[in-house]
Image (cartoon, rainbow, N blue to C red; front, side, top):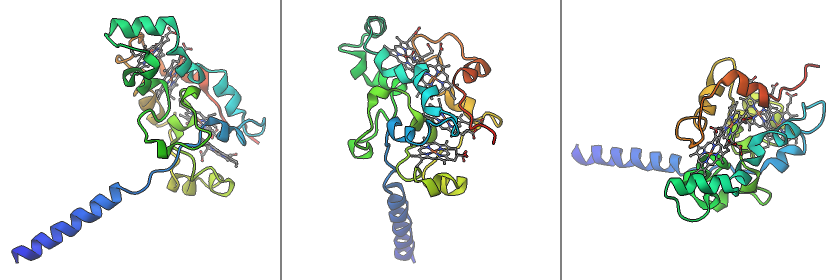
Amino acid sequence: MKTLTLVVMALALTSAVSLAAEPSHQYVGVKVCAMCHRTPKSGEQFQKWEASKHSQAYKTLLTPAAKKIAEAKGIKGSPADSPECLQCHVTAYNAPASQLGPRFSKEDGVQCETCHGPGKDYMKMDIMKNEKEAVAHGLTLLSVKDGSAQKFCETCHNKKSPTFKEFDFKTMWAKIAHPVPQQ
Ligand code: HEC
Ligand code: HEC
Ligand code: HEC
Ligand code: HEC
C-alpha cells in the first residue's frame, strides 16, 4: 500500500515538473510586431509606441541622471547593466538567451511583448485574427475596463521606481492608448 502511494506521488511529481518545463514562447521584438501594426487600418500601434517613453526606457539608463540615481543606491557600474534597473526598463530582462529571437533587442526598452506576452507563436496572421487561438499561443489579454491593465502597469509604476511620484492610470493610459480603429 505504502509503495503504491509513493509511486502515485512520484508520478504526480514528474508530471508537475514536465508541465513547468514546457518550452516558453520566444520574444520576437517590436520590429517584428511592426510588420503588421504600423498601417492606419491597424491603428499604427508601432508609431504610437515609438513616440512614447516606453521606447526610450533602456536608453534612459545610459544618461547621467540614471547614473546619479544608481550611485545614490550604491550600484557600481552602469545602471544599463544592473538588474535592479533593467527589471523595469527593458522587456524580458531575465529571460534566457534561447528565449530571445534574432530581431529582439533590449535597447528597444518596454516593448509590445512586455504587456502582450512573447509573440513568436501567436504572431501568425490566422492565429492573431482569432483571439482564443492567440491566447492559447501566448497572447496576454489585458483590459482597461476590468482593471487588469492598471494592475499590470503598477508592477513597474510603483514606489520601487526611484523616480516614482504617483501613477494616475487614466492620464497615463491616455498617453499610450493604441486602439484598432472602428471600421
Ligand atoms: C502577420 C501580421 C501580424 C503580426 C506580425 C503581429 N500581429 Fe498582432 N494582429 C494582427 C491582426 C490582423 C490582428 C487583428 C486586428 C483586428 O482586430 O483588427 C492583430 C491583433 C493583435 C492584438 C489584439 C488581440 C485581441 O484579440 O484583442 C494584439 C494585442 C496584438 N495583435 C499584438 C501583437 C504583438 C505584440 C505582435 C508582435 C509580437 C503582433 N501583434 C504581431 C496581425 C499581426
Ligand atoms: C516593465 C515595466 C513597465 C510597465 C509594465 C509599464 N511601464 Fe510605463 N514606463 C516604464 C518606464 C521604465 C518608463 C520611463 C521610460 C523613460 O522615461 O525612459 C515608463 C513611462 C511611462 C509613461 C511616460 C510618462 C510620462 O511622464 O510621460 C507613460 C504614459 C506610461 N509609462 C504609461 C504606462 C501604462 C498606462 C502602463 C500600463 C498599461 C505602463 N506604463 C506599464 C515602465 C513600465
Ligand atoms: C519598479 C520599476 C522600476 C525600477 C526598479 C527602476 N525604474 Fe526607473 N522608472 C520606472 C518608471 C515606471 C519610470 C517612469 C515614471 C516614474 O518616474 O515613476 C522610470 C523613470 C526613470 C527615469 C526617468 C525619470 C524622469 O524624470 O524622466 C530614470 C532616469 C530612471 N527611471 C532611472 C532608473 C535607475 C537608474 C534605476 C535603477 C537604480 C531604475 N530607474 C529602476 C520604473 C523603474
Ligand atoms: C504598457 C503596456 C502596453 C504596451 C507596451 C503595448 N500595449 Fe497593446 N495594449 C495594452 C493594453 C492594456 C490593451 C487593452 C486596451 C483596452 O482594454 O482597451 C492593449 C491593446 C492592444 C491592441 C488591441 C486594440 C483594440 O482596439 O482592440 C492591439 C492591436 C495592441 N495592443 C497592439 C500592440 C502593439 C503592436 C504594441 C507594440 C508596438 C503594443 N500593443 C504595446 C498594453 C500595451
